[in-house]
Length: 365
Ligand code: 8OZ
Image 1 (cartoon, rainbow, N blue to C red):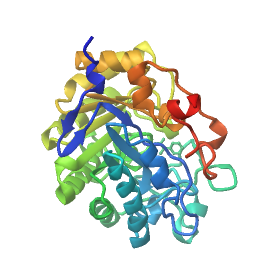
Image 2: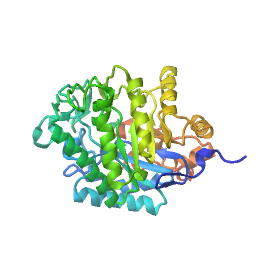
Image 3: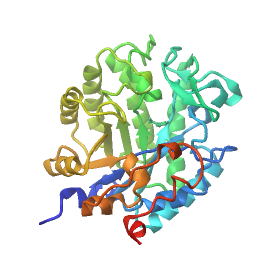
């Protein structure tokens, strides 16, 4: 039998994937507390997973204000760039490709995580019905302050600079985090964006920030090294919109003109069960996109093989399975059993539950 297309190489713009199994971005909260430099264990963690066709790193704040949780890494300081260089070197030495996820959380933050203890920033001063982890426990997110126009323009420049930093750190490209109720998603949706200027109101206006971020990043490092993640039908982080189908039909249609390396879709509720209703909506939105498409969310081996075989997806991203199975690609190829992860060590801590999951070979020995 010939091998399923899932395990065959492909090209997404400038990215050369050895297979179509992607490691999804996973927040692990292990960065150095003093300066948000990636953990000294991060090179090992990511290199262990380098057999993925493409690794997307954990979300990494593009500026200090873009941070929303304790111990997430940044990509704005020289020390952070140096730290990430050890990660990209390790992954490349192991034969992998890696892009960094560029993250601005917007209102999903707490004053205790913000420079000077100030309010987080957002399209509008509307508090999210969501919580964050501040290093001691879970706490409701803070009431944000609405961004001024010149601050929005500065964030676009910050995205571009973060993309240049990523290239300086040796990344093959970037994924813009447009999903899960963070800043870009907050601009898109009318539940969090009630601006009356060019960035608010109509679907066209609410999509403006997304397109401007894409243009800024693609302009800085090339569209062929720029990917984007969206979650149109996810309620993650209390995000609300009156007509998400119309909104994302417009957004995705508009994205076609940029010829990005890939669009990475969280299909349905983030991390949640798949439903027929969201599946139908996703199929419609997927059909609007004419570039490389990475599908994500609740895929089994069989679903992933079928999705790539039929062309429903060009690649499939796995999140939690990659935490506990560093050799996920080999296991999927062999149809071997997958190890279960320990949720207690997902967020924060050290090597336990991070770099100590064995490969199938090591587990058998
Ligand atoms: C889990 C915990 C904290 C953040 C996302 C970046 O949902 C996240 C995240 C996930 O996109």
